[in-house]
Length: 542
Image (cartoon, rainbow, N blue to C red; front, side, top):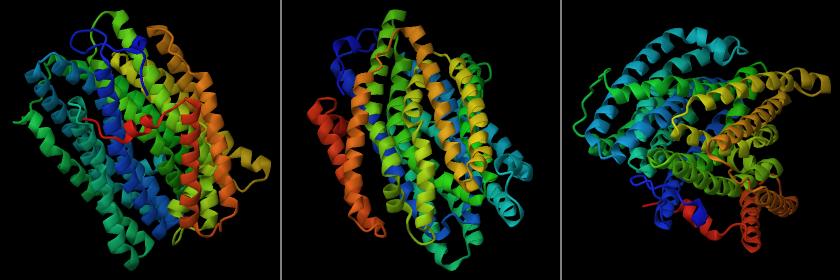
């Protein structure tokens, strides 16, 4: 995407509008994030496919998916939340002002603080796991519940390592070294794939789940280790100096708790689905996990890529309030256009061609056609809020850049309340009233979460525009993108109808490649996108 002169941003050092070169650097940073995330997610899909081969939607699969939410929760909470919103703005500003010694001392203090917090959390979590299960999966009983408890206790130390890995991500992102931080999870996924390949053929599902949890902890250590040498180049020598009198650590700490609560609420929103899903059985929790892997791919690849690249840049901007507001409007406009271009066909594909996508990735071994259809329904429900979730990330980053951590928190709380209320109705009473199999309430869970996501997005957008002025909605362009995506999906559906459904490895590429080609080609002809946007997103920035 290109920006007009009116959308120019503020120079971090001088407060003046930036040139096209700076705008290109910002797109390059987003490309580096996207490249790292793409590589990591592709390997993650391989991991999930191998997992599906050995587990399907069995009780052991549900137990592992439920337990696995513990490390994911802590990583997402500390990585994307606390460090992105409270640490990076302060650390990046210090470096932008050439106060590098103070920035290094702040980074060391934050590491020491995180180390202490995670040590306490791990010790408390391992001890309290039997009680935590009532919060994670209260519907699990008997052997499934016992297995889930054992898996959570194994995974907790890995969660601490992932939090320290997130600290590395904060340092690397602040220095615009995006690719390594987002590609590092590749080694974590490879460790789990290796565990499955080695132990899968020779062990029962319950024992395999335990070995996989151990492999996950080993992978977490490797993910931290591959980032540490580069981080130490910026901070050498690293001293664990926890100075509570530091003004900058005080700023980070004051921002910590609102952001902690805000991101915690966002994570709780995802947990509400799993919590309610546990009452629908382990198969529902497993299906939610498979669908989440696919759903979060565009969220991470496009929403996170743009938001993560923009947060340090927006946080470093200085100048008059009018100049900063102009900078944010320009970045938001360009970022939202780029997000919409990629997320809309993702959502349309999940709804209209979801069986092809799920079958191509998961249909193997214990994962059968009935499982494909089940996960497709859950994935289609998730697609309702896909555009809102990805766009909302960018608006939240803009609030964090303005040092406002409380506004996103308020709206996140409303989102969770709505998710809980709608999710309960759509998952439990509604299927019974309609005479449906109870497990189809799982799709109702993800649908209701999407509706709540749209409410949060609208509130974020309205509040931000009250601060910086109107941000163009691009409604006409968005409508055209939806129409083209549906047209492309119709072409893909026609191809699917003439192919044998029982050959997912053939059907997948035969349908999805033409789908993408039609979408990209038509949008190019209509002048609402260019192939350059695709090349920029996936070309690693320098």
